[in-house]
Length: 77
Image 1 (cartoon, helix red, strand yellow):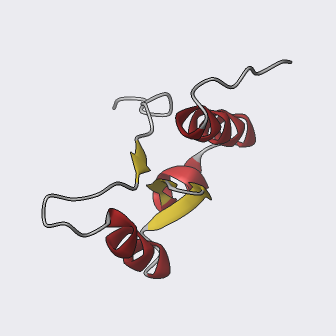
Image 2: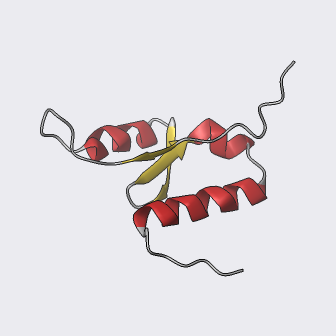
């Protein structure tokens, strides 16, 4: 049995698609169906991964989402 509790959690970011549609339309449908969770504007994570994550990992996910939206952000502890 493997321990995947530290497996990386993929963040999905909305963007324009080759079919000239914005992915937010598709991502919003996945949020509505409960498959994805919006962490921050334009950044999504698999809902099941969020639910099974402990609170400190959720905080890391939220920080990573912020860093993706604001690449120049400086985080202090």
